Length: 375
Image 1: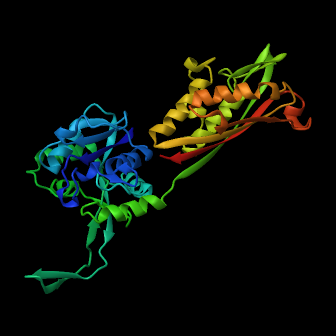
Image 2: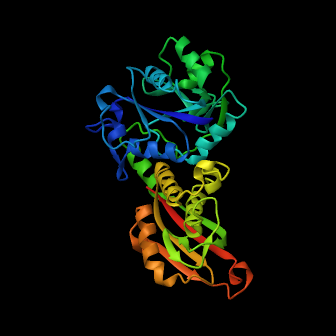
Image 3: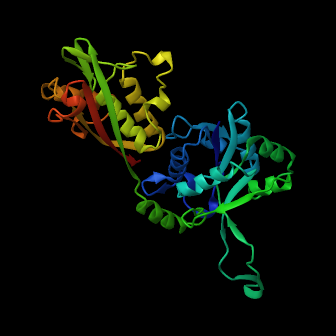
């Protein structure tokens, strides 16, 4: 089972100023909501429900994989609408996040998810470190102990069933879902929050959030390596091109060793394992499958997680067949499959100076690197 997410985005955010609700205002080149949704998708949460104001249901530009749900007049009513949208989902846990927290670090999300492996509920918080005053008529009227006080943040994580029951029993008006859970007797574990995880509330918060997002450039690199032995045949599939040869490559699929290495490089950059995790060789449906199916899946997964594939570099290691005469065609085919410009695809070859299994012409090896950049 996966962990689902609900992004609460139905409010109007009047204190933030501007002509539009704060979630649709521009922030560092995107809308606030776009940054928030991207952070949640990149964390691998699925499904992701975005609860919108009824007037915003047709708003453009949201990722296709999110589920749009109309919210209610209050925050807890909107959360209940999001929970109802998960009735058919095969999930155990749900993380509820405010759309106005676009800078949430991945570590905060992961801390909540990790805590839910043993806790009934978990939420991030920051210990209060400033002195606290009580005020009357604009003057200090007393002090308040900060001992044991935390500043609450989101996402707040819960078991789906108990939280839904807690909301159904709550009279309404809760400040957040922790309040709802505690009213139902659900203990909530505090995990470390982060200062970057600010909630945009006032006009000056946009500048703070933009500064955080501007310094958080996310670049990922992955490596892939694959080997296939020769068998009887009349050619080898290499990077999407059938190269004439007196042997073929042996494999469960079409044994395109170059495409497999590139695919694994993309999965590696995403920390998503390898081809075997997504397309098990034990599954007969992948027998003889063309390798572009695997590669397209890896590229689509990167897109879903909020990354753009910047470039790939693939080296084929063999004595024969000669790759040079076919390298341009391989480059064009790989670029087409991945949706890249050809100049962002490097296909080259080398020998192993007649050493090892490739030198003895027992098979072909390939290694590849891929670079992903957060959108």
